[in-house]
Length: 153
Image (cartoon, rainbow, N blue to C red):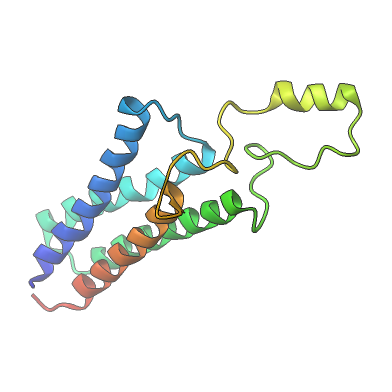
């Protein structure tokens, strides 16, 4: 497969993941959490990198595409771990322990809590959440970007 086709495949994969995320949000009514939004930025960058690569032929850009895909994969896998309770997420989108809180502190925490929590799984397929799927698919896209980066033509 040529470098341009690999770039098109990788950038198109990021575009498809973005469209799916927007579909879940706008058609499925699933509002994204903070970590969900963070996962979208590198996909947008990968789409832009792909377009510029195809337009200019600059050989360095597929490396940047791989970095973008690895970034969103890392965020997605981190988010999946937060959802599974393997580690804590950002305090701005998860719930901490409440055992030692007074009623006033608990009420303040509830009132300051975001509408969408990062540690809840709104949808999964085969036991893997959207964040987990994003991480896994993005690792695959990173490999495609790396193939493109190492192709001569």
